[in-house]
Image (cartoon, rainbow, N blue to C red; front, side):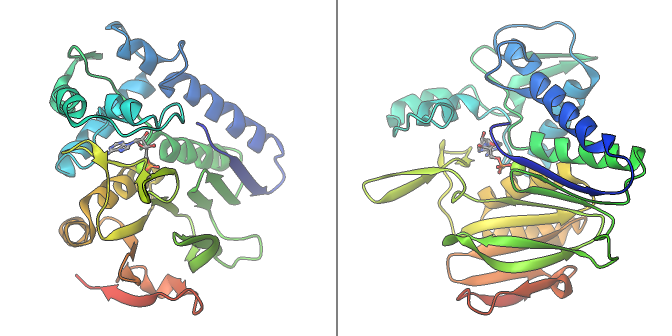
Length: 303
Ligand code: AMP
Ligand code: MG
């Protein structure tokens, strides 16, 4: 999944971590957009036959979240990402008319489901990159449970999933990166049996003419998100939901994202904004400790 994975697990079953590693490799083989043997690759290249249960379920989940977030999460944005060079690292700013043409083939309405079959309209492609790591971290947590591990920390490229508490019984402490200085933390979250997933354009970007272009795209215009947010961290029981929402809320911008939280309330969030505020939803604020030297001010988002 083009990232690092670490698992700290405490208990007697030394097999658990190896099983989790194996599981993540299996998932990568299903969901990769670049591996010619993956199911997603096959779909993107004309295949319309049977898919594994897991691939179908994750595609369905992504489409459902696309609908719920009013298209902010768009699992069909891949052809646009390719144009920007985010898939190869050969970055470039695409011509507006190229983007305009590509955007005609994006959107969840270009994906058709019938029974266990998924078909894509001509020119459309699927990319589960915004949800796959969250799903994989959730699968790792499941493997920990199956193996009787009661204390673990799974970190899949910043997608955090904690199982239970630390071995000493205290909550896990998770640092949230300062997007303006990624070697430092803006604050610390205390978590037990929860997932926390961060999205932000500081994670992968290129600079041209002093402008930063990041890897999360505003699907309406096909251009990297540039709004009032620096990062969004979503906290909930389910890591897959966290992953989908952190990407989508980052696309929405602060006001819309806060409204979305008020409308659903099945997750909590930490928004780091360009105006140097860190806005934390009321359900998690007691578990968040601001780094006093970060230069940010803490604000509570109330229902
Ligand atoms: P994440 O790191 O989970 O926020 O996901 C970002 C990744 O999802 C990017 O690297 C792209 O592969 C893909 N992506 C970019 N923009 C979007 C979007 N608006 N909706 C869905 N996936 C996206
Ligand atoms: Mg995501």
